[in-house]
Each structure stands twice: as C-alpha cells, then as structure tokens.
Image (cartoon, rainbow, N blue to C red; front, side, top):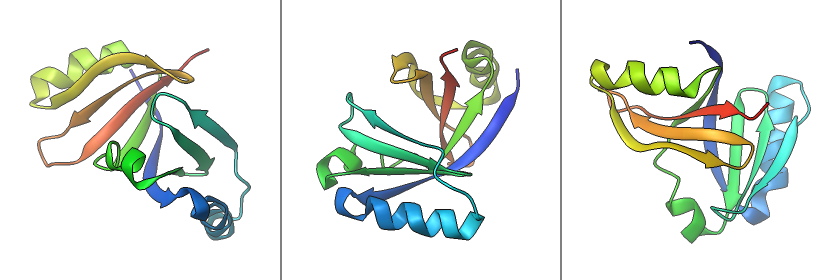
Length: 120
C-alpha cells in the first residue's frame, strides 16, 4: 500500500484551461503530461506536474469542487480498508472511472482527497 504521487486539484472555467495549463507549466518548468476528457462528469482534466487542473462549466465543476487533493495509489482496495478504522469518512466508495478506479474520503482534519488507482 503506497501513495505513488500527491497532487493539488484546481478548478477553472473551460475557457481558462489553456491559460491555467500555461501558468502551471511555467511555475514547474515542465509540460502538460496529459489531457483527459471525463465523460461521467463532463470535465476536461489536464495534469501538469503536481497539479490536476479540472475545467468545465460552473454546474459540472460544482459537483467536484469540494475535493482538495488527489493521491495516486498502487492499491485502492488496501487504502479503503486501512482508512476506515482511522476515522476517515468515505464520501463515495470505490468505483470505476475514466482511466482507473477511485474513491473520495474526508480525513478527520477536514481534508477531502480523491484516491485514484490507474488502470494498468
């Protein structure tokens, strides 16, 4: 059970995605690794280093904006089992999503994290 990478989630209007990507590319001196359309939420995501930039219309973003961070993990089920006894509130359990599986959890300190395991 290992967190492979942590990232900040940030949210922008669809019209502002390219400028947000340019900002985070400049800040980190790296290029956008990938852009992914997420049909189930009608959001376009761009990953630039430690930032996951989510873009869409205000209504689509309102449904996911409460999540503060993303943890890319090696074993989603192991994290689900370990977190529950730690007092972590699971906001939605493991489910299949574009590119893999995820769940969302609120830590006792209030941090809301998407745990994501990529499909191999």
